[in-house]
Image (tube, rainbow, N blue to C red; front, side):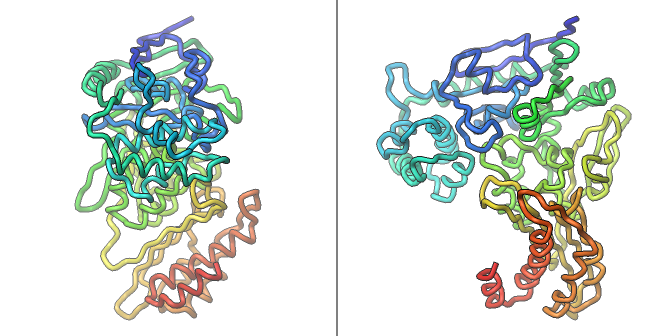
Amino acid sequence: MNNATGSIRFILNDEDVTLDDVPATRTLLDWLRLHRRLTGTKEGCAEGDCGACTVLVGRLLDGSLVYESVNTCIRLLGSMNATHIVTVEHLASDDGALHPVQQALVDHHGSQCGFCTPGFVMSLYGLWLSNDRPRRPEIERVLQGNLCRCTGYEPIVKAAEAIAEARPSAVFDPIERTRAQVKEKLAAMAPKETIRLGTPGDRVIVPASNTDLAEVLAQEPKATVVAGCTDVGLWVTKQMRELDPVVFINHLPELQAISQSPQGLTIGAGVTYTQAFEALADLVPALGPLIARIGGEQVRNMGTIGGNIANGSPIGDTPPPLITLGARVTLRSASGGRELPLEEFFIAYGKQDRRPGEFVESLFVPNLPAGEHFAVYKVSKRRDEDISALCGAFRIALDANGRVGEARICFGGMAGTPKRASHVEAFLKGKPWTEETISDARAAFEQDYTPLTDWRASADYRTLTAKNLLTRFFLETSGEPAQLARFEEVA
């Protein structure tokens, strides 16, 4: 029996699309290629790593129309309501003239075999729309999520620099030409009531508000809640899991709010890494470099802070620093809300303190008290776009005599959950912040953690690296740059 209510509506290039039949696990990539024959969008890795499937997705955010690059291979079609999907086929003009981004790649020989080229075009197009004069680090950041085995990247970067240096003042551009009309259409497509599609065993639900979401989860406590798809997408493409129902929340304005108070920062669970970057980096500067290494640009445009928490992964990058900072998480259900320290949310591997019908609504990150030291370190095989072997966060408060008043240390990748190093913390408290103290404290890590060996790192490597990161934190906070330089050379 079909109990469908409403439809999924979006814009594809210059066409309004309405879908009444959307399988719960249908990816945007498969729909574009198999149903619309837009084959410029490629499947490479099917896990959000290579960028060959990149398109731009426009959405309304705080009243503005924002376009971002996304990975269609792991983005589910049901999440696309009230968006504007732009594929590479939309860029050239009707007479066949290439868009300046495309022409620059031709002029600078930025393509060889060509398989990855459409994805690079779309990533650079997103940059072209948002930044008139990107610096090289900004170009490289945007291309973190695009892999090419032919060109060595330099011609592609040069193409991006050339676009910035000789940006035409008036040029055909399909997005700028229709921005006002698209904004009006997307506002009208926002759901006024919960959208329900599919049949038992294959259902899509798109709630219209947080209240609707709570009511849906009260009725469907085992539903799969999807925000950015960066993890759930792999359940579909790699594990071939059937999901029912899937509840999409990436469009809910109430989950996308960021607010600052004298006490700290409140972040809605639906806020993406990209949205949260500036606010978190302003609050605690050390968080900026960490967020810049989470996935590629496409993943950061999709993945959410709340999803990284709700997922409960022991190797998530945000829980260790947030726990170290004393963050608190707010959960909500149809019966109300509750708040708890983030570290108490993680109970055991694959188990969180989330009752049936509850969802993660927001996160509060308090200000770092003046004078305290904080750092977070991500260790991975690749610098960019790689999952951590371990991620460690350190926070220390020293009294007037240079003794440790408080120490908070938390690691991901060292246990079945993000876990504080309680024995190390206890050992440090009250002792002088000296090299001798740090040397003696290293042994306490073995009381706190018994890490696993897997393909990312051995147990011995993880344990030794955790100890070394404490030493690094000491060197960075002790005002002895010569020692730190020698440490980095060895590391």
